[in-house]
Amino acid sequence: MWEGKGVSLTQTEKDWIFISDAHLSGREPGEMEVFLRFLNSEKERVSHLVILGDLFEFFFGFKKSPANEKVFPFVEYLPILEGLQVLYRQGIQIKYFEGNHDFFLSSFFQERFGIEV
Image 1: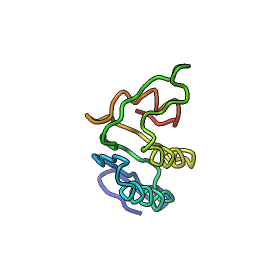
Image 2: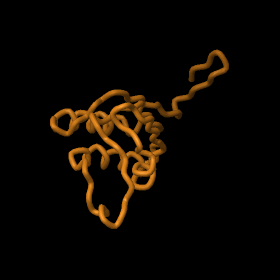
Image 3: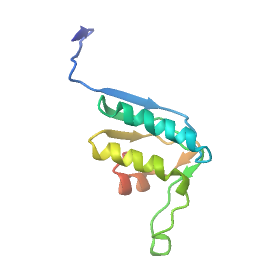
Image 4: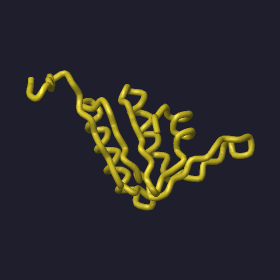
């Protein structure tokens, strides 16, 4: 246990991970595999994942409609999105702050992944 300045932390409390400016493009599968391995290795110790923008090189949100129901323009990002979904299902809270390379994400992430933007 650590105490000081009005803060008390115990061993049972879990960590937070902050990620910023990864700029994952999907063109380099190795970089995405390393990122996913990192998240997987930390999932038992972390309670919150905070993404501080530009996780992807370029990603914009879009609304589902009957015309694009099965269309997803960023298929190269699916491994990362599926990895985030697994973390969310395991109870890890995920917060996503949009950057200048990823924007209008709120409805997409909230509807499909339960991630707060």
